[in-house]
Image (cartoon, rainbow, N blue to C red; front, side, top):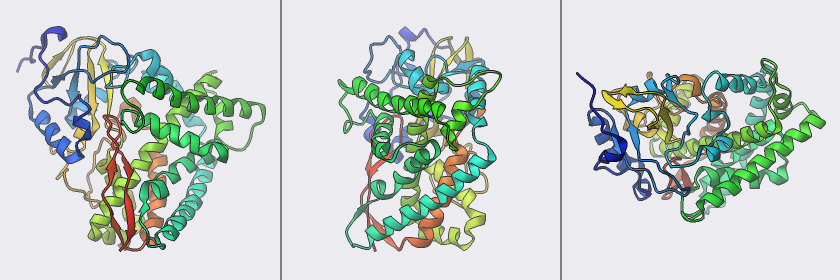
Length: 424
């Protein structure tokens, strides 16, 4: 079969299903996926209008990549699909994206070098220390959560539980002062979900986004500077001292890594915790099955937590040259948006993807990306936190009743802002 011919972008028709408008992203996940299911059933890729933008732009639109197989193909071929022109579905200058996303907007071999630099700081000794800190923090946080529940009043799961462990983990790892932790946590959450009207309207969004970026970046550069002058036995000291092929991270680069770690490393695990807790409360039989042999079963359960939550909805790539995806001709320079939320509900890759099932033996999910060079660097840390936190939750939290969750309205993060919980 010959490729589907695509007209020049400026004369191409947008698809009848509009997934670019903010109104679409106020719908619940299941309703949105009914639309993505229709897009997955279409031949080839579908062309869509750019979302409303906070920055001036001339983008004509983007290709929606909605099938698991196509996302994996694009993710594994950086020579054909580059990250260097930007990774955001929303039109945003690369000059803004690059400092806010660090090595996510790089391709190999540059990306490989920075990834090795960061990875080299995670020595076995550091990982053991991190695990012991997470274990202790998880026990303390769950203890506080149980005490709050015992009052009989509704408790906000997100505020009292989900958001605490990831930020405390990051703070312990790199040495953020306790007095600064709340400001850093808010900046990370607000930057990740800045398209939600609760944080900023469209007119103020660019300024708001850059303000939160500035808070995180300064926290990273200041901490890097202090660790160069006064090294300690912590991860930040290891990062500033790390060297690969004669290259070390500058303070500015450490600041950019701080933005990435605080936003991606914090918010993704927070959101997965909330979605997974909700799913297990609603499915007591699966919770009981997990508890019957927790140590043997939690690994597979965590993979299902991440798939079900899909905390990061998309990343984008741009075609390096004229090429073809799913029988559709793609022209050099055109944007392709990889919808992980759709890939994780693709029945051609997963059995019964609309069902939450921690007993899955095959789970090739895209919750950590589509594979390739940009597979999530912090996946091991997220898995560790979820394993240790749910070990505490499932053995210490009594039966509870969930209230109605309030979701983040965002085309980038699948998040729960608030969810009341009370004792049954």
